[in-house]
Length: 391
Image 1: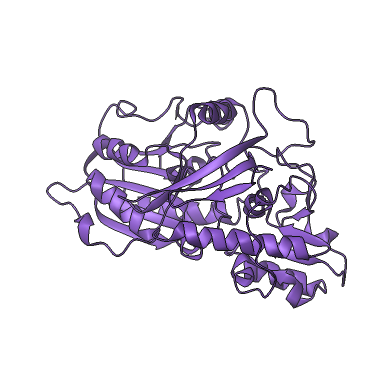
Image 2: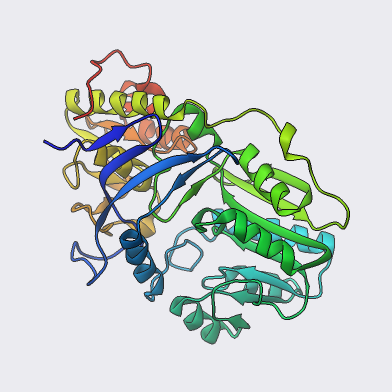
């Protein structure tokens, strides 16, 4: 039997994993878009980050999804994220725009335009750059200016004072080239500001919960610094977001100044494949020896479930009630809410998110779930259960 996962000295691969690009009301897939795809993750050793390098067929599948009138990101009124994650990134962008006072800001990958609307409500002007039908629909609905195309060096006619993006940096196949293009579009003294996922903790742990087909890059603090420095940026500030495990990054184009990338810390990704093998093996041991198991935070649990060939046998849960009873393509069970956890039920929960583990555990404890039955991948790496080989 072909193994569900494999780890070598050069990559870790899951043979088949649900392709998350929408939430729907049934298990019926969308025509011409695969519900599952393999995922193979390597290391970019020059810049010290993890990369998913899709094949041409896999890229074609993802591009078809991007062209659909669907929201792949979170920032829309139905997402359940506007007052949490959305509020955090919007405050960050507003603070930086207030600090640098550009006449016009440009948002790459603006999606539904809610950061643009937020800035407008606070007296600032932003122009969106996004190729999707989804963004076009929202620009017409809300009335914001949109360049309905992919970002490139010719996207902006005049040098820009301020360019920003949210949940874009992790989606770009050539993030170094992208950073160079942003740099070339900025005026001297111009600012590049963005929010992206922080995978430092997961990489250090060997956690694979970060694997997602659209997130082709998984960054560390060191990799962000090196990528931006290589593109020519200086005065690089990397901070943690106020919600979730994110980077809030600000960098400037300053004439005659460039950071030296050679002396920035030590590689974070070294040894990741060995650590990932240990994490997957630990999850497999728990999975095969545990009854009445359930998984919390679907997007972070699905990579682990895929390593044991589970595409709809284990109930999945999420605290975001806007996801309740929705399906992720490639997984045949709907997402449950916390309310469906019965008082004092004897269930075993694997919580896929390290970031929100403490918060989720507290919620489950309040419903009477035994503390010893709530585990993260960090717990399983020290679990006394049997260690089983990949199969």
